[in-house]
Image 1 (cartoon, rainbow, N blue to C red):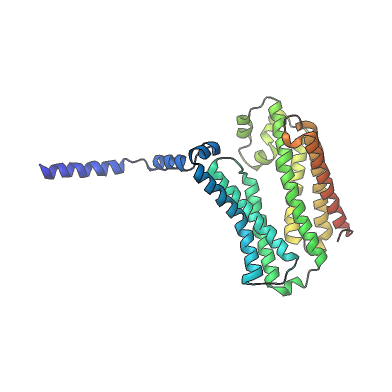
Image 2: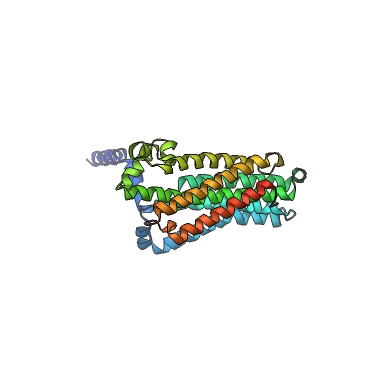
Length: 300
């Protein structure tokens, strides 16, 4: 009898293990460890929330600190503007890592396109700076003015992308909301390819976005061309007018987009109020003017 009871217990345990729904268990663990809302996690685990915030700050600054430690102390090199390029690249990598860790707290502070751009551009800048810093023969082919122009170009590209995502796209979505289009519907129609995500193609065919649709297409195409040309060829004097011209044209479109955002989205968008909108427009004009002067050779 005892042997039969043991066999029954063994089969019961084996059946229990076999009947375990592994995806469901993993999903339950994920829901407990990674909650959907940041506020609920903060209230439920205040100490862990503080540790998580500290860890995010460390991830943000760790690549930059590692770059400075390597170039200044472990394998010291001559201090120049190239160290600044590498520092900017490693900081962008840190921003990308920060965005990835913020995903653990839900959708807050997380933008897939921004994370991808930060990691990609940051990695390219860091690799380029490392190559030029530790291979002095390469730097002989570049003068200081072109290095300065390159740094300004990268800064302008990042500024345009931030303004595009923070102001223009927010104003477009706010204008759609003002037309009684729900967030769920906007989110649904943004799926289905890059055309829908970047340009709201299905929304435009159904609702008609007007000038915002044309501005969006022209800016994204020009921005991508300017970013690629400046990242890969921005330090070569042969491509100076091509890269500078693309950057200036992108800046002009950026100014027009800021004016549109101020006119259409200022009522309900805190980033496009009259004061904030005018500030964004002035900043865009300043960056575009600097790009134009740089292209003409009057700045550096």
